[in-house]
Amino acid sequence: LGVSLAVARAAAATLNLPLYRYLNSEAHVLPVPMMNLVNGGKLSSNDLCFQEFIMMPVGASSFSEALQMTAEINAILRPMTAERYGKLAINVGDEGGVVPPIIDVREALDLLCEAVARSGYAEHMVYAFDCAATHLYDTATGLYSFEGRNLTRDEVIRFFQALVAEYPIVSIEDPLQEDDFEGFAEITQALPGVQIVGDDLFVTNKERLAQGLAAGSANAVLWKVNQIGTLTEAMETATMAFRNGYGVCVSERSGETEDPMIADLVVALNGGQIKTGAPVRSERTAKYNRLLQIEEELGSAATYAGRAFRRPV
Image (cartoon, rainbow, N blue to C red; front, side, top):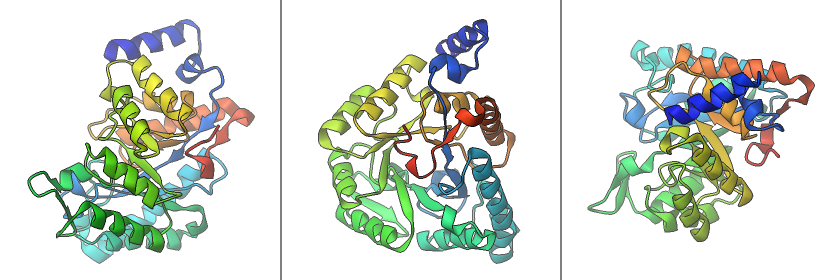
């Protein structure tokens, strides 16, 4: 993969083109930042079952405005969390979010919603999760551990139906364990209008995506370029997803560096959504800064994905 990415960068530099333009002459979409402001699960030291509690500024008019909104909300959330849960709660998790010592999913959502309400941006925001449910699944019993309770697959689906009815949730990543293609098909049907994202389900792999397409599992792919051998293979997976009506969410990894390449890649894909953590720490902000630069380079040709994040073109 390293050689593949280096060759792409070298070719772009030889032609004096930015990487996104080298990869796609029609690249013009700036993604909605999926801001993971509350961390749980394997990404944190708390007992929240879900890894990521995310807000999406779909009502912004541009990427720069979206970033401004989310940075302001994060600045409200941190002192609010410290006041409510103590200073240790604002030690950042792996993705840069706060780590309040709570177990209840609704309490975490309410915390995030309150910060958004205080900012005045509530009408511009919707919400998402990364559940990483494989880590919650017991292969011996076939049950999931949610909020200290053991749930069957059907109970998990009903759990999400209740949450979607209560909150403006538009995207749920890995709500079930990674090999349950049938279950992913069921939850996709049970939550019409909600983006069901396969990360561990698909691992940016065309063969696993083909299996999901045949079963009707999920309706979006989490796209991590280092889950597959080359940039070409990763882009082929994205193309396959788009052609079959699936969304593509470009994502960083927990052990990120300051390399901003995925910012160019999400624009090259016209992907519409990017997940690269909270707007803090240089391995996160490097990507956001690069997207601001790309938006400026594109000028009037830039289109912010907004509410069309799943199918921006």
